[in-house]
Length: 305
Image (cartoon, rainbow, N blue to C red; front, top):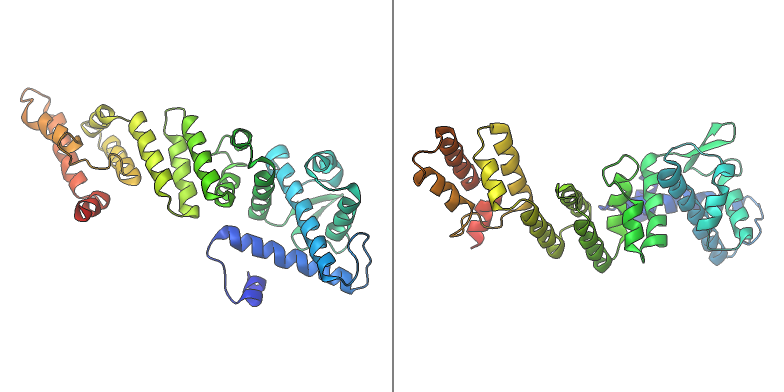
């Protein structure tokens, strides 16, 4: 981060941009030092700035392939070049000669700062988050035109080896592709609403998207309809009621609980029109109405209207 600040005078606010700058700073410095020391690497040249830039691009592409293999295929930190070789060749889109040169630039002693040796020909990327970032870059390059395969690759979203990669991928897709990807994710929802939670996490890093937020609310209303919410809000368990209320506020579902036929109206009907109902159901309904009325989300919605 210090190197990024020295170079640009500012730290990027988005983590995708921050990691891109960190990779650029460290790899470029390593390549420049090797070339300036008089080391002549085939295909890269010695002094031409354009060839130095090409050297950087190919070295980073090699790092992306290694990170992708470790993170999403092998699901581990430590690796050897031999065990990754065949998979790297599948992902590599250039001739083999630049691949060999990129390997020399990255793993020649001293190895590039993004990597560390763990002994016995084993290496690892120096930081797991860097591995996740680089794996995401490779995934977007390979699968951004095939969202079905991208979705399969990142399943399950909440797993240790895919969660952060999926969040990075979401921030790397174009706005249009991201919206299409989110729709695909919702179409594959298993009716638990877990995918909606993940998409909300995507938006924390990416920023707001009215279209995607509307899609999430629509899906949640489909999964957890009014009757289901009413049942939860009238349940005697305080923990369960608080859970339902928390989800309502988090996702803004339903968008207007105070509508004529909204949830608040139905809760009032339970209290006033069912005199023979269980007392704890009426009490829970009353408490839920009060809590809904005090929710920040709904207060802001009412003020806007």
